Image 1 (cartoon, rainbow, N blue to C red):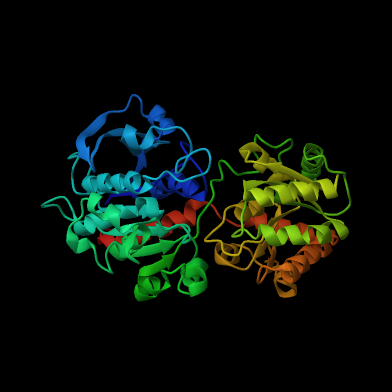
Image 2 (image 1 turned 30 degrees about the vertical axis):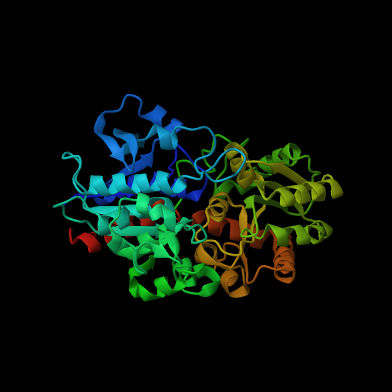
Length: 484
């Protein structure tokens, strides 16, 4: 029996993206289709999204959606169904998805994403007679209010479907002052400690977690980590209280987009059997970053430049990395002081460190296809995708032992190497001693060609496509709906 799921997200590839959430929301519908699940995605009507549905059919018109005129417009996300909330006053604006070009959050984000949640609850309650749903899947705080509306203000007389709340990053919770509550269209009964109230204000992620049938995170280890104060960001008590209703399902990657055998962005394509061809890509990458060819490994970093990502510690380690024969190519943006510090490091080590501030999708492919090792020293990482791309491309991941990094990379200790299982280098704790030791160990492994090639090939053989993850989500949906 086919299951009909409404996925609610604030971004999804290929239409709009700021991070990994978009990759997941865009890939999940296709991953579920082989398992008898039809997933319809509900997205905000940003300008880029409206362009994709400019010939779409209007499913419903609102005169008053939390005080806004809005429409629900049908379209396609790839081959899968899409519904767009067209609310021009909320989403038709210049700047980023969540804030102005200057970097400040839009002050009405609480209203923008509450409206998205209200529309999702209406759809799940049968607003459009031709679109029925067995389950609602909300992603992050921007979609969490969908589950709160289903719990406290469902469509009158409707059946309330089960809900899944997926946390992609607990650090972002959507917290707003008490004054916004009266504008949400929720009954007074929703203002309670196990409702939307959180420390005297409105906690949108917290509200979704309270209302969800099951909470999922994007890796099994992160599902355990958020039970602690270190990773729970103030919501660890709620996580613990939900017991086995908190699950972890690791993200996947799209092999159609990330496959070194056919990647159009690479100077030369290759497979696990033709790894020597990567040398051409390495030389091209060195030239692109203005790096001198060398006999040591070329480390790459593709990251937001933030404290979470451990970039402050990486800055401390750069002199050591260069001193033992390594070189670095970095692509990223974020904290302005860190951006300046990385530029200064490149000036201090010309020909050894190259830095590009910003993001370039094609360049990120070339870095995975030409770099020897990718550094991911995150203090916490719910899942992470760059290490998965690294595995697929034979760009050996060097990762902190946390979240999805711990779940997807097998450390190249002696036992793992002898068993033919090692796929990268792990280290515990993000500080100078541990990261510098991990870099040194990576350089040592690189100078053992047979061992290095084995690690590369092991990673490239691993299956981190959406096949297994799609099956896991389909099984969860069937568990919650009782439909087989």
